[in-house]
Image (cartoon, rainbow, N blue to C red; front, top):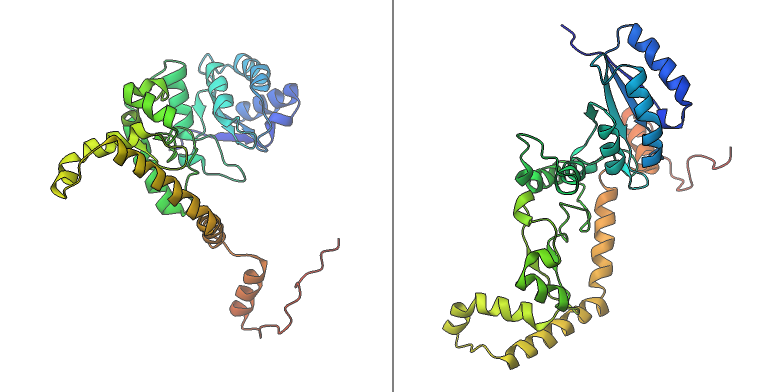
Length: 292
């Protein structure tokens, strides 16, 4: 049989609080068991959560187990995770989360940010949650959706455990906690050094020592001068990538591939003509007027 009947309040974060409670109470009396409070346009603030959720929790009996409460927030201003954390702290029973933060526009509250904020910043570890598989989940969702995570995405981004700056890499070699709060293995990530124009000699020396046996087999002798020459060559290579347009082309390829995940208006019209067997129009003008 039916165990839960959820009723969702679209755009609740911009509604009058008293009206939202009145509406939810009516739905509850009609048999609803879970109230989904939605921040549809992603405009909620932590202060807004602090204002709405305690009143909803206390008035509708959420704390007493009479009603479940879902916090469904969008991330248009980058506040999805902290807003959801605040809602749960006030008594929301169901945080609405998505893998990789996928969702309309700027996405929804991401699973990885929510669980790691709770764990690392508030000391709340979720029993049975496999934190070390977050990176694996990210990769699987990227392949299935065709949407890659940006390199600087918190927790699971490719750049989170990557270090290039000479000062940073030297410190990381002393102790990772100097510049890295989260241990990469805790989320299934990999620490790596990126060698570019900001690199220093410490990381290069460390990598050369790591592969010293392989280099020695090729007759290479490690020295300070070799480290210096390698560093200069790396910086030259990075500058050449900029000069030859490599970075620009990489960005253009990314957006070109992203656009192929869907179709534009012109392709939609061609699809309709194909479905209806109508002749393709010769004109290349816009099919619809931009007026009105």
